[in-house]
Length: 473
Image (cartoon, rainbow, N blue to C red; front, side):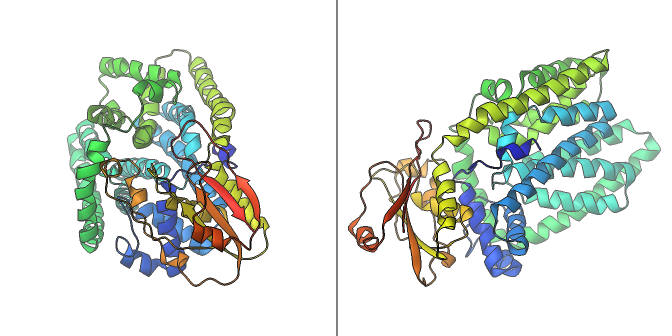
């Protein structure tokens, strides 16, 4: 319910165009085509296939409607809160789990991620699912070995950064083996080994099938993404005292003292992911999201030192409630004013017009910060019309483009489904990157028999990239 407060927002950033494009290929051409052409006919930048594959299944079986993506991500968000509770209960007790799950609602930034068609929130869910099923596997064995292997496999192919995060699993195995009597240690090690073996076989098979694609991606990550992490990010002050409730940060810091005093080895498990991100100096909050359930569990562990549990419960509920208030009263009005709201409103307006097919054109500035072509898939996400778009622009490989965090937009390749032969065009959408751009002669000639019906020009003074849409009908 908390995540649903963002459903009416545009909540789109340019990265979403990649995942939408990948998912739409599966919707139109099927699962076999997606698996065969992922990384070849389907451009994938540095993306992994698991989450776009799930989005594509939703489009194929339920329809290409943004609402279904929002429902899916809201479900994952809710289940992440539940998994945080269950993991805390496995590590300590029911109260620690409850506090940890509720404190996750004290991160208002996460609410804004719920309706996004990105991989970050699903990645958080699959990491927590891998942690919980792995712990259950060590405790119970049996069918949990298969469940753990599958969750590790999906996590592994959700995002490249999850490879580093999955190092938490050997740590869990070590902690659980040390804490057990000697006769149970062998059983624990055997279950852990079986889980790793099963997951490893699945991962190795898919990796072998896509070795050429993924080896190129890994090389590019080392060349471009790794140095870029030092240039792209927010301060820790912003992340842990503004985007996160300060109560969570303070309680998590205090938990270090409590864990040292109690010499609780289980605390190392919740400390590992935050430690990794801090040690590597990763400051961009989108990339650190998978650590937040563990930070909340650490904060929960610290709050367990309060003698009167009703006071701790009161604080936790205040954190969650105030976070929802901040999300709805501060984040939401801000998102209403960003220029990408133009794409959403233009898509809704196009759906009200008669006719099924439209043409899209993009206007590029002299020194663009973003290739405006990526706005076409975003418009496609917000309209049910069939879009025709002929993209032929190439950009020089300047130093600014090569080092840009939005470099992928300049390597945009037009999907084949936009290049199909058009029927009767009912409307034309022209997408510009700044106010006052004049139409090139070819576009002027194309729209001469159309009337300029609506202009969506909400503009903000925050982001360099603006998305302005004019509809000709």
